[in-house]
Length: 152
Image 1 (cartoon, rainbow, N blue to C red):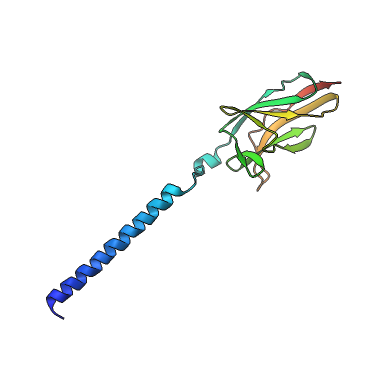
Image 2: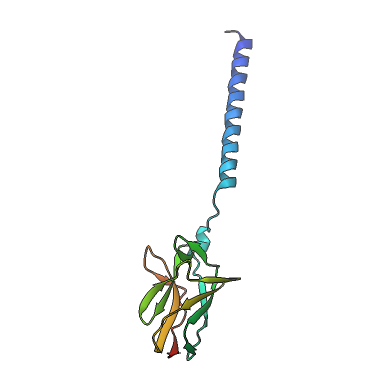
């Protein structure tokens, strides 16, 4: 094989390598541009904040009791529950754990929400909100327990 033929063959291999490299970069660019945004590992480890505004300790209600609360970061609907990253929202009402379904919680905006509790028996009740990791059962970001009364 002549030197000229070897140079053309070498040049052809270099051109193929550049085309394949460019194709890899193009695929990587499409993949990065179309992937779903996920919370960073650092954010996933940050304990979320949850603040219960209503009811306040000692409050009295007739009928529906609204749980008005705020979270940081913002809650997002996931499957059939609300959550923040790996944590899912729960309420503890008189020792029973309630799950906040997508339909039960209203969004006010700016991280504020309303979760109405209907059908509570007259008397004194205790409630708190918390976020739990369903994989481990760990509880993070719990509010203090609040005691309120429902009148007949």
